[in-house]
Length: 202
Image (cartoon, rainbow, N blue to C red; front, side, top):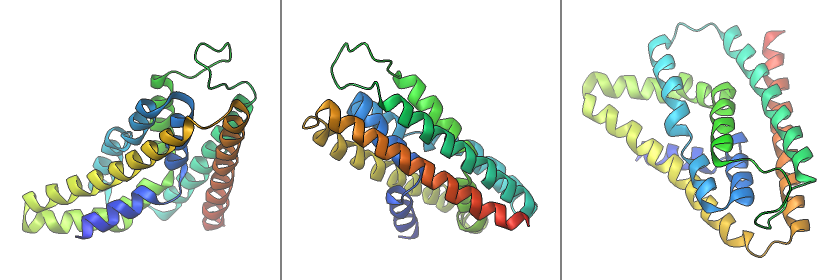
């Protein structure tokens, strides 16, 4: 039950990856949105491995610096998203520059790796829960992680489906406004993250 609740909460919580799922679905349709929704299965393997090995050894200052760098990266992606919105079009074969599905996934992986959210989650509560479960039953620990990511990815996939259905009703103008809004959301999230973690360096 713990893994179900934590995974669902993480899946629907506002954050950079959630915004990228929405943006990718608007740009390329459901298939692309689902691909980005599955990014945690790739990027978090690094996060989980590193944090479980280094749990309790990482200085607070390192995490703070990671948060600042991650915040700046998120804001930069937001600005780039807004710039691209000027020439975006829903029309197939439009001459506007479009990101490929691989580009979207690569960007989401990079952003998720520098974002402090997964690192903090695994350092503060997911890591300790997994380690504790492993000591009593390795199978229970594996099941905990599997259920958590099933809910995390599943929640984002459901969002991609909902956005995809609404996408067909969008005009190019509405689409561009939605992408701009997503860009502003990324900028806001990035700035909040950078400021929050910068205060911990003082």
